[in-house]
Amino acid sequence: MPDEEATRVRIRDAALHELPSGADSEATLAAIATTAGVTPADVLDHFDSLAGVRRACDRHIVATIRDMKGGAIQSNSTSDPGFLTAAFAVAPPLVRYLAWAVATDGPEAAELFDELVGESVHLFALAEEHGLLTPSPDPAGRAAVVLAMQLGGIVLHRHLGRALGKDLLQPDGLMTLSLLSMDILTRGIFTPEAARDTANGLIEATSSAQTAPADGG
Image (cartoon, rainbow, N blue to C red; front, side, top):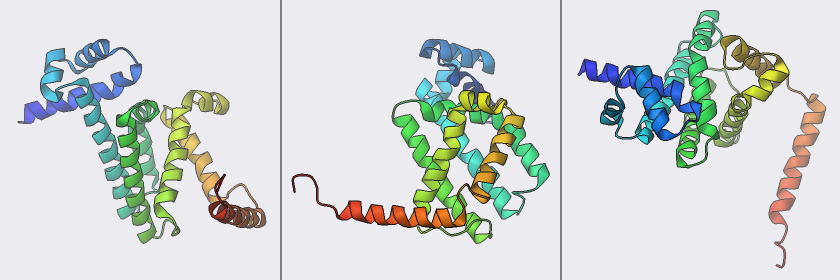
């Protein structure tokens, strides 16, 4: 029913705002209900438990990333100022929730991270098809490391924001972080020679470590 779905969306959106508050479960449930304009019993009727609300928020985050980034890649609008402005405008509450969700202990955070890695692998492959990314010999590994770098910035948003003089949970701060990330990913830090030599050294060291006998062997 339309009204029922609208209520579920209101509760989910309220949870995106209230769950990162860190309050105890009873207080968080009450806060979600108040923000959504329903009762705590209504929240439980729609999602069974607070864990159910969190699962709905996690699925929404993953779906939003998939739809927004995937659509931009397919329409060749990833660099369009209009798309970027709109994306950064809606991002803050999602980023705030994500910073909290992946930093918590437990299977929920692990499941969310694994889903995000899977989406990153898919989006990177799509971007390769559209000529936006170079191929990688280890697509899953690359996706996981890039995701961890991105999530690290928002999990540490208070410290990183202090260093940058920006609120990284606001559009302007997110744009600044993205610009700096793009500079690192495109221009790099090492000179080409240093990057080549270091990569070769790491490959050799990794090979040696894999073939070395175990202690006591």
